[in-house]
Length: 496
Image (cartoon, rainbow, N blue to C red; front, side, top):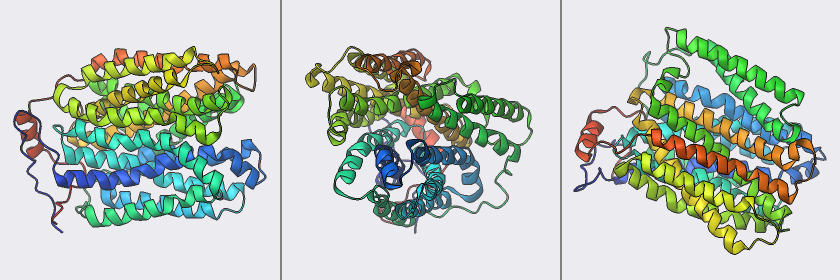
């Protein structure tokens, strides 16, 4: 099977290089795999109470289905960059998909809550590798001149998956057994594996070129990340003063501090190179992705609950009412990706952040009598704003680091994005409970909770001005594409 030419496509007249068919095929194949983890996470979240009833388990026990998955993802993400360098992106992609498939099948035959939690942990180990591998491979294949448009395309499943999850989950639980929450993954995972085998070229021989595993870094960073994610996942129900939360945060902070000291002093290659944060543009980009994770997942947690408890809608109806957010993002992301390659992120991200803040602001004063004619455009504005923020910010990450640092940069993005998502959900859950004053959210507490994405949008607005401006000219970027060594496998020609 012949690989794609190493010579990048010539730029269109007066514009950046076009997206050739080989690159689009590569992106499409990887998006199929990426949709799995995002759909699965929110489908299972919708079914937590159903699972508690099926297994006669308390909600506290069955929450391990979500927490166990998050913790195994947290353990896998920091290792992904090293594993790609050691074993190759194609092998790791197929391994991650295979683990996710095996975990899904085993979850569908689980016989009690502990077995389901164990199989979700296996599923999470696969899911934790999928997104970092995808981002690294497509960033290397696209090159700096096309990265904005490519990020616009692959950001669609990142936003649409969580939005579609509650709708799909509601349909499944209303018409089929709980096992179908996991069996739904099987045909998509099989298709993703077959497509990857057919399209992704074999990994080049690695030999001894890969750096040895930073064992001390693994022992510090992976459990530190997992401890913080665990603490934040418990903070939503226990508050930030609960013993498990305090212990988790303290342990995580201590391990993180130990990793920082180790990574800055070691002469070997650290698991995650913290020197990347010296670059102001990179630091601004990952900070924005942390806030995007916090704002997006907070909204995806808040909106279905808001429609159910304030407006009295059923689960499926609530999921459908959240769909405009996904529609806005689906419009905004490809548009922003295309514009990012032409005008840069510095104008797009602040504009998108303002749209997010203004859209969320409409919900801070809403109640049971607020018309859907106001709320639907507000959600469209939020989705469009997230699209204008997400794709240009991700493209900025890869424009601000050297090619050989792409895998490490991707790991940093996903670590902070995951922490942001956990923090966002924890904060809004705590606000809904009035800081522990009441167990059932009130209309007023929903209004207070929506101030969190408003605040996140305003911070992103300010940070957006630190991002890179207009990219290099088309000619310069095209020349860079022809000389850079891709971080992942090259896209395969459709005629191969």
